[in-house]
Length: 266
Ligand SMILES: Nc1ncnc2c1ncn2[C@@H]1O[C@H](COP(=O)(O)OP(=O)(O)OP(=O)(O)O)[C@@H](O)[C@H]1O
Ligand SMILES: [Mg+2]
Image (cartoon, rainbow, N blue to C red; front, side, top):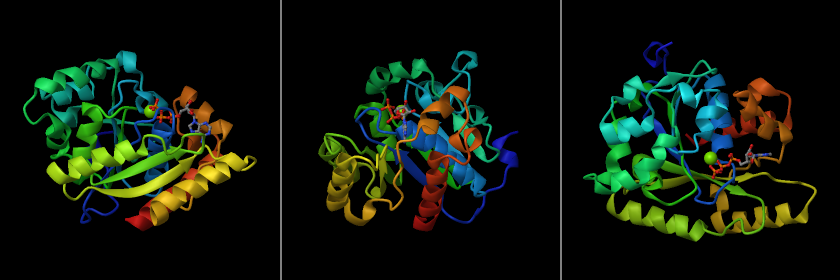
């Protein structure tokens, strides 16, 4: 079904564009984009996910076969391919996706010579934003040009932090990038929320990290904490969100709670 035939929950409200971002690898960005979008969709919100990571984990997490794609977000960014023609349906009725393939890896370098390179994504998505309640951008684990494009296109940031050693490592650098973009290109940019992920209640380390992150970010930290849960790591290999794979699992239930908190925050 075309995204044009699906109604928004609240057509009068401004679309919320969230970049799910942390240049540290493997902290749960893609897992959060896939599963949060799915539960927002279940809550009648119309969601667009944009995969901005050449690894394409959000794309495959939704069961989209990358090999079969003729075009991806790269073509929109660098060839001005119409973004509306890239929007695909997913197995979630109200969730749509702009996919990524390994082709996108070239964008990091090729964008360098593009005029207004940091603002390319923002420009490209401008004309489809109004069709969605939420847009979630999955960022790659770096602070390169793709991530910079996400920082310019986003209204707010959702920062997943893994409850592990060195959790806050690199966060200062991320906040520096945020301040730089705020100062020059996107003055309204804010932190939407900080999400603790892969929490293991049996370890004191998890508790310590959670405490440390709360000290640093205060109220920005979501009350909902994503536990380490095997169903969350299994679901992507089936190409479905955890709510479809193992609805009663702790992982699915917690992402449902997170969606409620996200909706409450606006
Ligand atoms: N709460 C969780 N419990 C168990 N496994 C998880 C959880 N969250 C993520 N994982 C697994 O951990 C790995 C990293 O997660 P994910 O791909 O979401 O991180 P990422 O930040 O997107 O990584 P990258 O920086 O490489 O894009 C994946 O194999 C994923 O399935
Ligand atoms: Mg990822």
